[in-house]
Figure 1 (cartoon, helix red, strand yellow):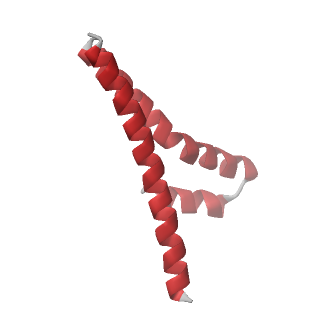
Figure 2: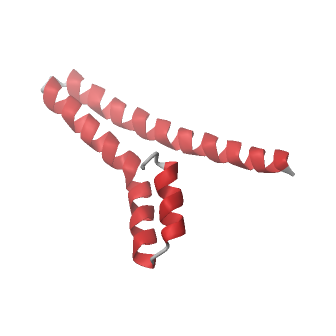
Length: 86
């Protein structure tokens, strides 16, 4: 039984990492294309950092907001712990 739970967690971890890597690759490709077209490197890097941050924190932010709206403190605490927040 523990093995099945571990497999389920492993699949979720792989899926989460794959999703993050896809976002990274997509935004990096766009930034590199902008650089190749002679765009301002500093502005492109700042835009990349901003977009990457927002894309990666969007889903957790929505989950935190929903837990707060629902008054679900247990879920809120689980999310905080999962995100490494104290």
